[in-house]
Image 1: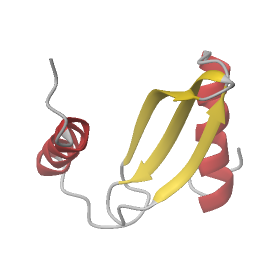
Image 2: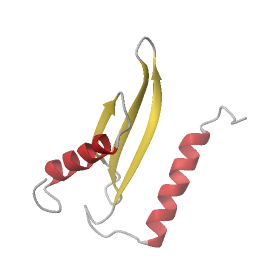
Image 3: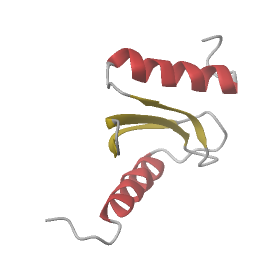
Image 4: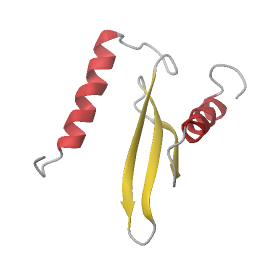
Length: 91
């Protein structure tokens, strides 16, 4: 059983720190991190949250909350991040 004291936050931070230590970033848009998780929404059922985080600035670049977790849904989140930042050419 998982303890109630923010295990998920600790685990996420640990993975994020490991990614940064292997490849320390020196500027924005050099390395992005993604995460997909599911959330119970009362009255609606399970929804899936996909996010894109800039490793250097630690800012969320894009997110989407969807009722499905298809590859197309996650690709849309990445395309939104590309359009928002202008990184990697046109989305």
